[in-house]
Image (cartoon, rainbow, N blue to C red; front, side, top):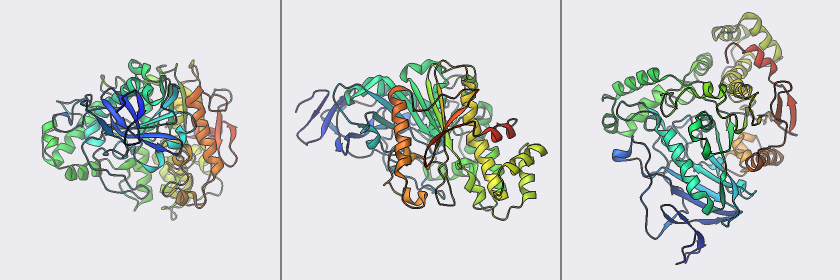
Amino acid sequence: MRTRASDVDEEGGPVVRTTSGLVRGLGTEGGYAFLGVPYAAPPVGPLRFAPPVPPRSWRGVRDATRFGPTAPQSTRTTPLVKPTIIEGDDCLHVNVHTPDLGPARLPVLVWIHGGGMVMGCNADAWIQGARLSARGIVVVSINYRLGVDGFLPLPDAGANRAVLDWRAALAWVQDNVAGFGGDPDRVTIGGQSAGSAACLTLLADARHHQAFRRVVAMSGVPWNLVDLATAEARADELADRVGVDRTAAGLASVPYDRLFEVQTAMAPIGGITGLGDPLTAFHDVAGTRTWLGPVPDGDVVPVPPLDAIAAGTGSEHDLLVGSTHEEMDALIGVFGTNIDRAAAVDALRRVGLTGPAVRRWLDALGDRSPGHALGAALTAMSFGLPVLRVAEARFGAAAPTFVYEVTWHPSTPLGAVHAIDLPYAFDLLDAENVDLFAGGVPPASLADDLSSALVRFVADGDPGWPRYRADERATMAFDLPSTVRHDPARVAREVFASLC
């Protein structure tokens, strides 16, 4: 068998040497894929709540032609998401897609999946990197520990184990990506939803900036993190509910099914406790705080990430940040058809808007129903405006910030809902359920616009429109056609200025 850094073995698959051993991948429509390649040892037994450690080396060639196990997570579905679950312990791994195994030193995108920090994986159908990599970049997607295992603060194991996983994966990329045709000096980190918040958390810690040059943050900002004391109090509550001490040994003694049952009851996705009452759902989401996520602990996460960014941390890194126009609109608009104007006014007043601000918001939305007006407010408070606050914090940064919004409105009640941009950004219009969310044939031009912008940014830091400045607030509106707009969120920015 030949054992150069990259080669083809007797099985007919491409082989690459990593720091732990040889891996065999497979050919794709535009290059090669290596799936389930470990960057850390399985987090089981004494390693379950420990910092990640390097995987054991192996002899021979390790098969990397199938997705690896997903991190432990609930199998409970949400109205919009059916989780991908692959059993097994070896869940800390990466998938690598590359167009060229030679010495090309291609730009690299390291992708962190979403899922509210409690679900998701790098095998999800909407984030596969083959077509993006065929455009000339290496795409590395990572798994990490979720929920209790990833974030619950424990007196004998600390917090933020998932943050350490992200860093370990980036260290693996630095050590290994050249063998897959990538350039370790041209790494961009990117993610959507919780993955986006993860990327901004990494941007906010200058101690690890050498691992990447640029950041892509899609529909997620760590604006709603709790402090360490609050996280510890919620952790005590969870331990009490399952009847154990809040220690690594105590939590390890609880069957995962029971742990997920309590975790889901205490930390549902988006803070939504139910859709039976849309007004309750509105206040649940508007007021939710994430305690199973990065916790500012003075150590792994030194300070709240947005405070660090506002103070200038990461200002030398290029940033592409944005959201969809209707991230959460349907949560209230679809299920709240009986909400009248008086109820909407009361709901908006209860979250802190003044009377004039409420009237301006409702008047600006014209003939939209009161329920949809609340949905639009939820989108603005949870996604749109936190994104802009990050961009505004970088007005004086040396490196540029580029802002976008997906404004295309598919012919479905969900509209441009949270995560609808993923299969367009990854050019995966034939993936499962994309046509369902598109309300018919997904528009190919939108996919080309989004994926091209993403690749251009990863390659050279310029997605194709002006940087976001205080005087113009240039924003790319991805639509049919896509166009640059100036300060399109002005009304929302001014109405909710005191809240976001």
